[in-house]
Length: 71
Image 1 (cartoon, rainbow, N blue to C red):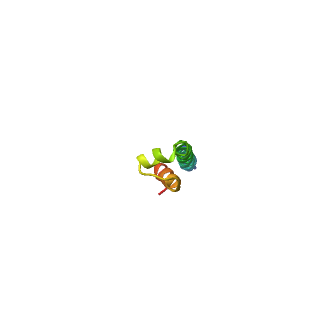
Image 2: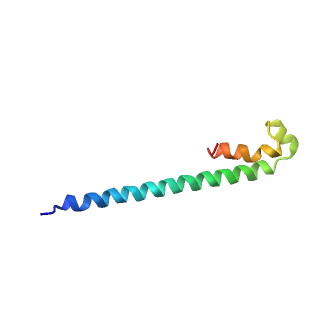
């Protein structure tokens, strides 16, 4: 005879896997948003302001990748 818990157990495992997939997707979406926000913000600075923080135009994408933890 199949018990109720034997029936529910696999479904609970599947639900946890779905939650984990959604969590990973949300984290990647947040990192992508952080990357684009950083690129946008740094792109608005002029060359002198970028130099003040130790960057040049070529380093904007690299800095944005680091801020998004994509190094």
